Length: 266
Image (tube, rainbow, N blue to C red; front, side):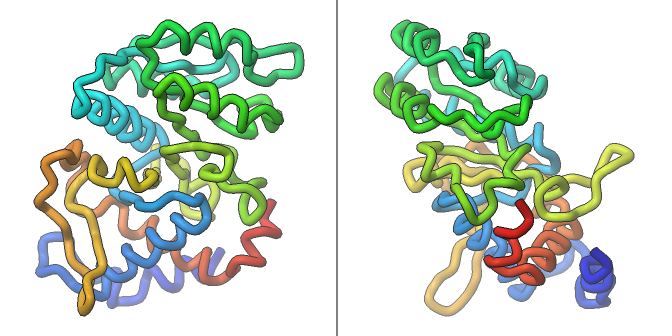
């Protein structure tokens, strides 16, 4: 949308530099879109640092890994359906996990029997799912899937590649997911092509907020500040605050449409 380009070219945004002193106005914008994305997905906290969807996947996998390491639990496998986008197993592998490929049933959905068998092995950290999946099929068993994974102590990761038809209708949290990455360049009208720029924010439930990359933007009684002192964090995963111009375009798009407009996107 042209309005995105008008806003991002305002001097107040186009002339700032990541090495200058922190501006609470810019931080407030980042904080506000984090709140918006939390409302859209049902998550409790977001990082905006990841520069692409696959980058967000890697962040999610590193969070899962750190979560179990902190608890002293060894879980070194991730379940990925055979219908998954190819970056899913690649991201999990980069984070140090072994991959269990899960067969789909005759309807293109996850086989619950195969999932139950895989989770019973005891060393599975979680599952990566896109819903609707890469075949365009909405898995009607989604709550059963996340319940099985949780029953065996695993975490559920939502790949937001196909979130568009879900906007305002169904949230990943309501389906039982613990972590989600979004593609601002797919779902919220920001540029994509020629290798970027992209943006893949990652949202998590309360229990996992302490593992998000730092610095983490929080709101105090009188200001927006950066939380730096967090020993559980997976650390910084990108310089500065992510692709600010891309985030700003998504912020403009969300404000332009509002809740009702986003629901009509699907």
